[in-house]
Length: 188
Image 1 (tube, rainbow, N blue to C red):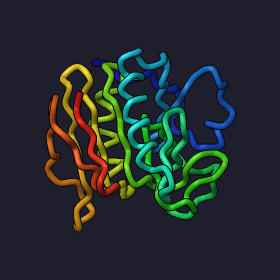
Image 2 (cartoon, one colour; image 1 turned 180 degrees about the vertical axis):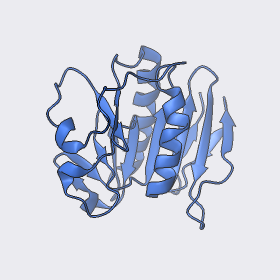
Image 3 (cartoon, one colour; image 1 turned 90 degrees about the horizontal axis):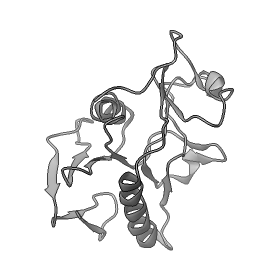
Image 4 (tube, rainbow, N blue to C red; image 1 turned 90 degrees about the vertical axis):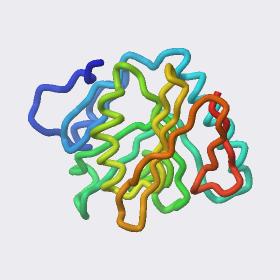
């Protein structure tokens, strides 16, 4: 597995990000730029579509909203100006229950649920950098979906503001979505 291509400048911010061409997808984590092209595989997109559909159907007439990539999630560290934010990610699926975090550009602040579907191209970043990023910024529930293994790891933010040991699910198991009471997702 390899990391996505990185831009060759020391650090970038959201102001820089907004000037980049639309034919490539990028993420910034602590100012480091990661190229998210090429597009995900067909199987990746099938899983994303199914999860999005189940969550969207459940959320009908409920206050939370679900979005699928590409969808910018800006994660400020303090009260820096928007263009100075140095972390902008595009998770495969996000659920946001605080509508004040939503604007025309996407989300500013931690979503309640983030789902990342592992690919050989993004796997190491999803399992390391993004794990610590989501934990640090307060994402309540983080799912890592392994399509080839047909497994899902679910991390939940504890009272100590850290992810504990993940709950592991495999084909046939049903996952109760912690932030969405009553929603169960079967691992296919």
